[in-house]
Image (tube, rainbow, N blue to C red; front, side, top):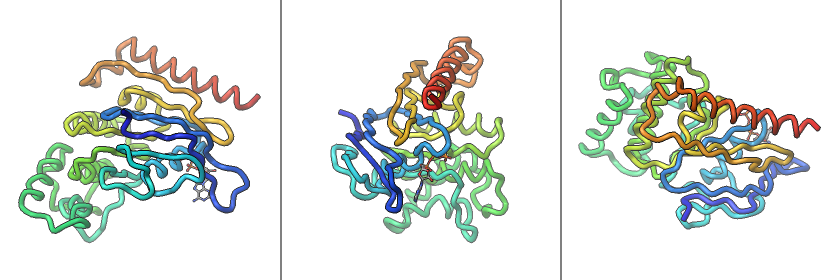
Length: 255
Ligand SMILES: Nc1ncnc2c1ncn2[C@@H]1O[C@H](COP(=O)(O)OP(=O)(O)OP(=O)(O)O)[C@@H](O)[C@H]1O
C-alpha cells in the first residue's frame, strides 16, 4: 500500500478564479525517493504544502499512512528552501528545536543529535552560531535537524538550489546516505534535472493549467549511488531523456 496517496486533489486559493492544481493523482510508496519537476509557478510548492498538511485541498483526498491528512502529521518533516535557523541558538541548539517542541531533550536525544551532526559533517561546528556558518553548513544543519526526528516522510522544497555545485554534490551524498539509513520516504522539489535523476527512484512532472501530473518517469539505477554514476553514459542518456520529455511537455503547452 502506498504511504502517500492523492486522489482527485485540487487546490484553489481563496481570491483566485481558477485552481492552481486540479485532478492530482499520485501514489508514493514507502521508502521511495520522488522528485517533482515542473516550470516555475506550476504549483510544486503548493503540492508539497498539501502533502505536508500545511494547506488543505479544495477537492479530493490526501491520505498519509492510511489516514486522511487534515493537518501536519508527526511522521512528516518539512525542509524549506531557505534554511530557517534561530540566530541566538548554536548549531546543536538549532538541531534540537523540533524535538524541544515535543518534550525536554534527554541525554539520549543529545547523543543522537551529535550523531546526526557528525553524519552531516558538522561534528566540529556544534557550538557555532548561524552568523558563523556558510550556506552549505546551514543546509547541513537543516538536514541534521530533519533526520534527528527520524522522519518516516521527508518533504524537501528545493533545499540545495542556492548552493554551489560542489557543496550540492556533497549534500546529495549525505542525503542519500541518511534517507537510506532511516528508510525515509522523500518528496523532493527541484528545477535541476541532473539532481532529480541522481537522487530519485521516480520523477513526477507537473504541468498544465491547472497543473496536474503530466508524466511519471522511473529512474532505475541501483543503490547505493556514487557520484561516479553521473559520468556513466546510461546516466547521461537518462538525464537527456528526461530533459527531452520536459521540453516536449512545455512545447505542448505553448500550442
Ligand atoms: N498563498 C498563496 N495565495 C495565492 N496564490 C498563491 C499562493 N501561493 C502560491 N500561489 C500561486 O500559486 C501558483 C503556484 O505557486 P507555487 O509556489 O506552488 O509554484 P512553484 O512551481 O513551486 O514555483 P517555483 O518553481 O517558482 O518555486 C503561482 O501562480 C502562485 O502565484
